[in-house]
Length: 168
Image (cartoon, rainbow, N blue to C red):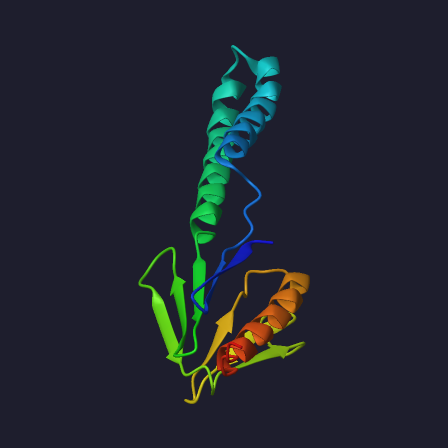
């Protein structure tokens, strides 16, 4: 799953990011294979004026694919960091373009909710503190991943508000 939980000194941290299936090597292979397959029909028209009529459109196709894949890669650099401690719950969303977004609440008042329908995606997870603001979490995850994350999130919030057990 494209998220991890870590814990240290009673503070749990969640780092979540979008799944990225195309590595840099995969990007190079995709562009190379597309260029090769698009240029293959040009072998039949080598040395004729038709080559120069088709070449700009083929190059434009490769450039559009390059731009689209790079844009998708940049957009997938979102990272959401949730910190749950007995003192505070803090969510920081690092956006690929633009400033980071911050949200903080008291863990006692923080509630996680999952919306099966009605949100922008199925199984939409939100956090709400003592104020009117409600924030989303893990929108880029798949629906089954959000269901698992919701259970883990509820358990982490419950552990943060439980009083510490006295040592015997």
